[in-house]
Amino acid sequence: MAASEHEPLSFSRLAPHHIPLLIPLETESYPEPWTFNMFMQEVSNENSRFFLMFEGGRLAGYGGFWLLVDEIHITRVTIAPTLRGRGLAKRLMEYLFEAAHHCGAHTAWLEVRASNLRAIRLYEGLGFVHKGCRKAYYQRTNEDAMVMTRTIGTDIG
Ligand SMILES: CC(C)(COP(=O)(O)OP(=O)(O)OC[C@H]1O[C@@H](n2cnc3c(N)ncnc32)[C@H](O)[C@@H]1OP(=O)(O)O)[C@@H](O)C(=O)NCCC(=O)NCCS
Image (cartoon, rainbow, N blue to C red; front, side, top):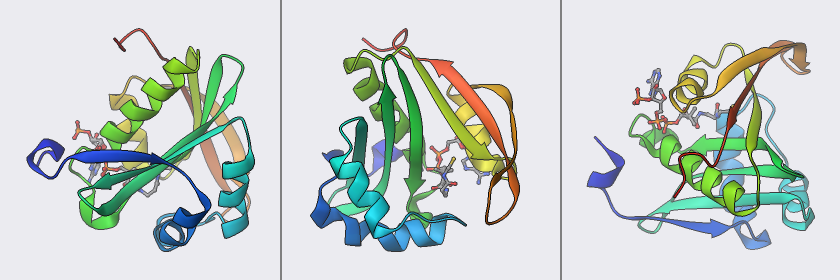
């Protein structure tokens, strides 16, 4: 089912009161989940842009990036398990690209676990290309990271 057939999406910039809402989704979505304090750092880090996506009133996902001059490093892209496979990650990423474009960024970078085929397919579908591999990048699982990049701005009006 397409995202457009459901309630409208809305986005909020991360604030401290949101963090308890994110922790359960974070914990079930990542082998190396961020802690409360790591999310708090996203609130105080002036280079961070971090957003929650709501469908109707409920949390559908969240994502963010660090702005490094004219590049962004995408830090998180997460969709609630029961809402996956409906194009919501794509919508979230498009929102992040728009926010990045407004900050003057031209290039996006990210790392993704080599086994995370679902995320890799999502990024390839959004025009990301593979730029290399960081061996044993994820310490807890010893897993490699694929490094991916794409330009931003050319498709944003
Ligand atoms: C990765 C994740 C964000 C994808 O969210 P999603 O809302 O299911 O993704 P979308 O529905 O927008 O799908 C986008 C693309 O992903 C791929 N995809 C979606 N569901 C898939 C599935 N079940 N199997 C394989 N690929 C799939 C498809 O290429 C799809 O594009 P298409 O529908 O045009 O073919 C989500 O699975 C998630 O939150 N995972 C846990 C956190 C995580 O790993 N984040 C990425 C960190 S780098």
